[in-house]
Image (cartoon, one colour):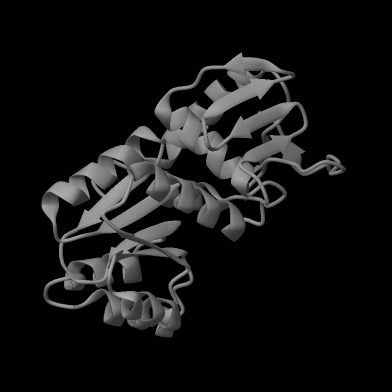
Length: 230
């Protein structure tokens, strides 16, 4: 999952981004409303943390511009604790949730997990695909109850595919959503990571759909002649 943090306080921006990266997300940062608007308008983020009080362009106008342009990613706004009017403005502009400053980082993480799973149609923190279970709260992955360890990039890939289980995910989409803007992106790397995931999982949880991408089947899906696990 790829997230954007738009916060002009550089220390707070760094703290939020670091916490998100440790939780397994790819994170881009912006420090004013103009840069934040541009990134959110041109990059395919899975969610955004957006401060209201930004230089150059305030958070409300940034959010309104995104929504007018059809940008539908979940947005978590940061507001001052005593400014209830900011919360109302934020929701009216298209925000999905808010956190009041000062806040605990765990609250940011929990609210983003909720936004991401709702956006993908999941009701709980646990994603299930056959014998594979992934807990987005703890980052724990098990196969038939046995824990499996992954690198951060392997975990990001598995989590993204499982968030979108039942849908064929193109390689280009995976590249856009797994890496921040400074990463040297190479779609061939995805094939390497998929191979590693299959080896570690030891079960047929990720299918290759020739010419289209990858699929994590939901329960009840069957195979077809155009799918290959190679």
